Image 1: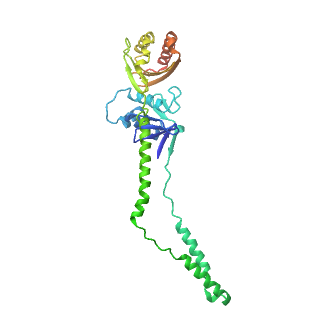
Image 2: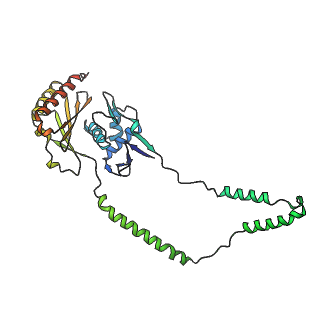
Image 3: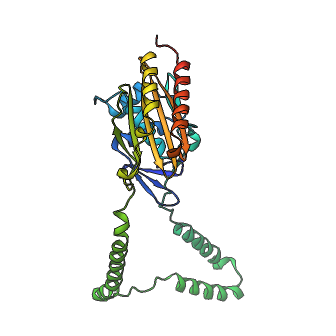
Length: 316
């Protein structure tokens, strides 16, 4: 049985997701795959953070942001929107819930088919039984016809003689077929080999260092094929906003983890705010043509973070 999440089939042998239509492969880390499998097998059930930490990482000691980071990476891998959260939903103060509507289980068909030959033999025997009528019950004019029919049926029921063929003839016939199939397999493998080396992997996270922001941790999310050195660092464009947000976090005794991804002219931000009780709240923002909107972007970022901090209940 295979598990399909939003048209992505889970392959446990590769720890990867395979698209059901395009065949695209997205590899996941070991713990990311276990986390997705745990959420999918408990669909429509709210799983607490402590349960997921124990089920995925077991007795390993990991940081407090390991679970939110892994959930964010999974959302990107299965094409789930971090703001709408259609598939993996964050339930405040409780944990996470996997939407069963995006889950499909495929059962492999049983290739062992019942042998119908017994039914054919039964029908043939029934036909013979109906044809072979006792001669004593028939008129003499019909006995000759019965003898003729019976002799024909017995002739048909006889097995054909077995013709013993020489073994070397079978080898000569099957050997070219085997060699041809082997050559085709080698050619197919050869032409597919270059594409196999370019198998897309899961997006990677790179940590950034922010000045004057000890309560903020920033991660850049990028695809392995991208040249991350050529991408503009968000920290260079939100320095005023980061410093002001850091002061707000100090006032509310909270911390913030910032994930961002740059694609062409669009900037996507995924913000996780945590209080002293390790309760998390998530905020998603996106900006078009952001390189020319530093002031506007900083203003919106500060406003939205401050609004969420004010809405967060105080830790009891």
